[in-house]
Length: 166
Image (cartoon, rainbow, N blue to C red; front, side, top):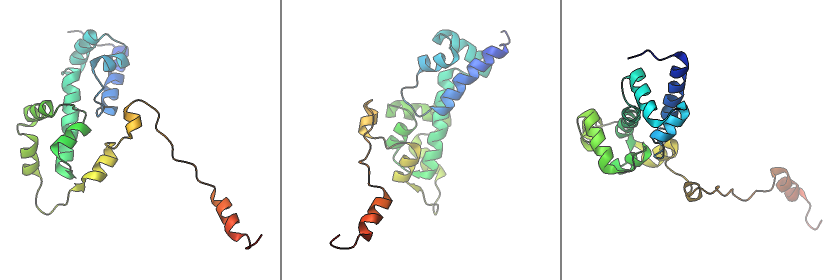
């Protein structure tokens, strides 16, 4: 095993930062992450594992499971909603990886860690905060429509202050 150079560590760190930033994006795959480092996918996997001790897929999955644990403890969302929010596209894959990481299923984890008396964050607020609500046009790749512009407040005030019959 060779010690990575400073330039290599910097490139790997950029890829790791991209995973930390975009962990909820289900489209974030190995090719996209390797592109941040400027490596081919195979060289990137070897270099990342040599530097951090785990593969990029293991690291990203662990980050997503950590966020899912937090949402299961604090938000009033279903397991399926949390699965989508943390970047998994398959509930079966999410449940299997969650159980492999924590030792229990997501439902068992929630039952074990949510105590009586503590109110959970409403699901709608948690989805708004985590970016779970996206306009349909944005999800399809088109630019979102902007609402119609309102008249300036001063124009409204001028209209109200005009005397009747003027």
